[in-house]
Image (cartoon, rainbow, N blue to C red; front, side, top):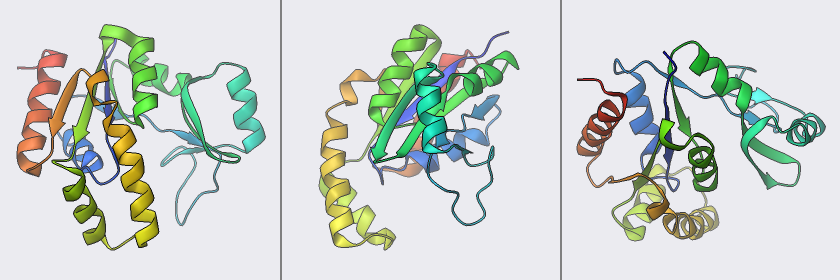
Length: 189
């Protein structure tokens, strides 16, 4: 049986990755879609594990060949995208695909797959709350946090384009809501 697709998008710091990691541990036959990027591997990252690492020229060649479901040039020659072949590989194995993508990518994947895909937007309780989360992480300089907040405000304007909005004001509650929503979509009792 062909699988289904679950798309997660959210502003940075909304808890999306934590919720996705929780869902991957449940018995939902979910497989994470590995994105492609033209940036160099960081630390111990391996090709085909964290990302498919492509040169900028190879990325552009694949764009021209229409091999991506969605992609974005985040910075000059720094591309990120979802290869159609990666998604089809997972679906053909009879598994469900889970995505962690930006809002534009999420909308594009949903448009491509229609009712076979469920798009979920994880929303922070407020911009103020989001800023506090990012500051508590202690991983970004104040100017980086400011740019993330500006991007988050833009991304929040896409929330109504998603099938489901889950407000993450309590992580455990948000995880349970996501699990219930995904189980209903996949027809798992």
